[in-house]
Figure (cartoon, rainbow, N blue to C red):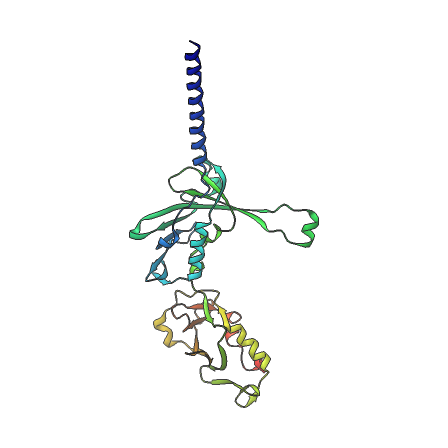
Length: 322
């Protein structure tokens, strides 16, 4: 009899142990450290629906080139921005579960209507991941007061994310989520000019409406029309142009009417520059920013500028270089 009782007790203990392991296992699996699991090499399309008034857009890989499309606008995406997005996908690590029920979605801005929805697709249009990015919290990192006097503490950034179709809201610490919540323009190529290190400009010219002004690098320094210039000023000017981004896009610019507008052109040539860089500026006084800029380095994109912006960097005038 005693042996039977011992056997029953042993079976009961084993059952309790097994049940506790089972329940514990479920608890652990409900909290996923790696929330997003995707082979980034297999990703060929990403749809992002930002919160706010901006319409959704798609990043799609075509013939090895990422294309960004929003409404009727389809342009080559900035490859570095897309690669950064893919890298950040693989770096998402959850810190803890912030909430387990739908009634907290509004607080963390992860409802379908308040968050930024990201959908990741693979071969054949298969949906690989579907999640919603919510709000971001910025908190000052703890540190001793004397440390704060000598160095600026980096803030702790916590973002909140929810998988579509699930209730749980997860907290993610770090910068990786922030880039995914950016809009369409963050994936565009903003370069007007970009030169490699070995490129050396030895000549450039302004083609104004009725005047051509040519600048030439001579053994004695920079000159224009026999007038010697301050070579340091010229080199400083050219250094600005080596990597010149635009600041505002002019997507509504009518290319068909461009031939009717006054225009200026800047051309730069030199060593290790196979084809001269050319920047064309149209002046349209009906626009808030009247100067529309286009270059053969980034021919599919038009930028807008006022007289004190990018336009001023391009056309400083002879007097500023003397």
